[in-house]
Image (cartoon, rainbow, N blue to C red):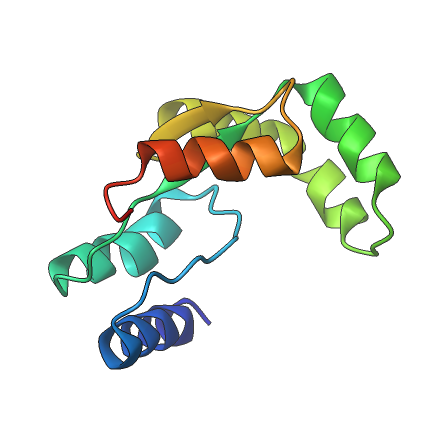
Length: 114
């Protein structure tokens, strides 16, 4: 699956020449290497952001979602939070007090692609 993810992102970026936004949770260093690091090696321009929030905020957000993947997210929350802090590189963005629109604007402000 990670090989496919890498190929799809690479192909989209190469063929369209546009900024590709890929929301995903990567909480294992080897997955980061297989996807993000390979894109960097392929010379695909990218910016990687880790959207952070405290555990309470994340649990509240998950409870407000209408989705069945919440069980996976809750089960892996501690592992992911630890990985985001120490194992996964990228620009860190604390989203505790931000609405989704504000997160998007913050990324736009930080981006080199705009």
